[in-house]
Image 1 (cartoon, helix red, strand yellow):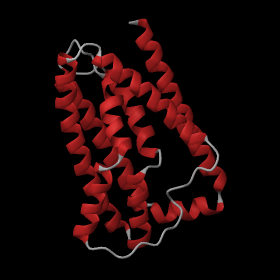
Image 2 (cartoon, one colour; image 1 turned 90 degrees about the vertical axis):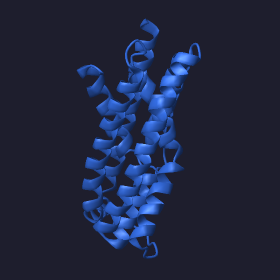
Image 3 (cartoon, one colour; image 1 turned 135 degrees about the vertical axis):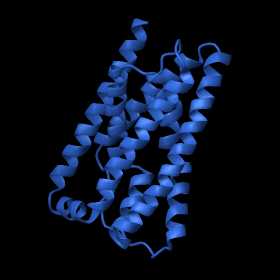
Image 4 (tube, helix red, strand yellow; image 1 turned 30 degrees about the vertical axis):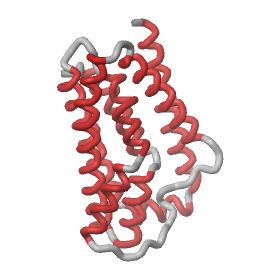
Length: 210
């Protein structure tokens, strides 16, 4: 099992990833604003199934790679640091777009809402990189890699469900709030960028000490 410190650090990363705009959030919020909170939650259900798929693939894949390929663990750690730094830069660069900007989408059936949520997640490179490049940074290769992967992946999914449910239910209100207060959106982007950048530096320094 991961240590408490590892779980807290990973939880902070998971929160930052959830609150960083991406295809999943944009689709879910667009549906919630256009078609109502139930549509947003159904879309989220499809996204969650995609999370479970990635978690299982990553858990068994990382386990196999760590034991089969020399230095694979360090390579994945290094890739994770680079990706975190990119996300930090992307969050604070000029011209960022808010996922809460109003978008009109055609009305979709519940089956289509779920399916599109699933496909949006499965074809989301942000999630693939999260599980394959960032997750290994919080795994101790001397312990049970599979158990740690499943534990951390489950923690990410729980955090994602909790935060995205709140966002889906309040999407309309949040969109209206940000529409007249753009400074709040800028502040959110800088907070997320700073958090992700700090995590990248921390991971890089820990790596150099080993």
